[in-house]
Length: 390
Image (cartoon, rainbow, N blue to C red):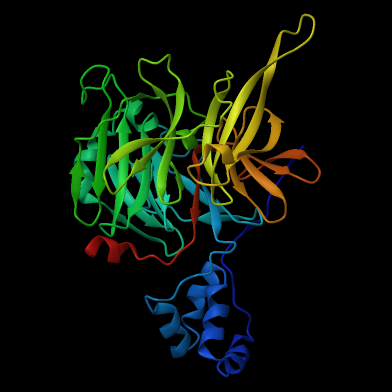
């Protein structure tokens, strides 16, 4: 059974907004800021045109949006027979909002586009031999010309789709960093070697002298290749080299430019296959699959999935099972209304309801083929230009 989320367009402010302005002008400034910070993103931008006071408050660099309900899942879709990509975001109420093409020319070719990661409401993506920084809320998108050489390395189809990547913030250097690990068997690396690139956006530097003694694993869609940002660090599922390909969770220490290992669940040696990482409730979450067997002549029948979360970051004893499902899924996002959005191998989204224990496929856009994502990001007013000009 499937359902179709409501698709909405721009949010219009009511005609009575000017009356409301008169009343709100009597409120203390701290209360007014709290109210404005809770408005939907598009409505907030329209509020900048209401009066000088509101514009000044919203435009102030210290103005911060309330984080509650700002989580979004963004997908890239290609209309059948079309050559450009369409984008939409799914909000906390499973409402779908169509987004404009950030560059006006993002190709729909599967091998010419992919998300690289998100941090602080900003999204990095690769499109047609260029890397872009995009804020979907402000609609500001800029090409990162300083990363042209790195973008050139991603133009090979095998590298564009099968590359570990992530986007994070380094507090020590006050800089955003893009982490990219290309797979072996490419003309840019020695045979059987991985290539690591860490690009600093403000310093405009690319570091390559970084060890990566791991092998790539099998990932469930784009989410496996994009690092899960938890506690400020990027995390991936990989295999140890020359150790029976044991699966491990690694994270990137952006201050030291090093990859380190995270403690696995204490029962991880029991033959589980881990298929995805994500951020749930602000905690590191992993999906692991266990093979099931049917009865009689049925033989192998599928997988059971355990969703586990690490309640205390870095403590392997804090791994806790959240739920078990059948279908080899990866958790993507949680909602206050006891629903969990899941991703499968084909970029499809499913909504799981904890109360009814039911799973429904979400029909996002009709006559469109999912091409990229979903990628989780949190709406923010972060200025793309300010970051690049710093």
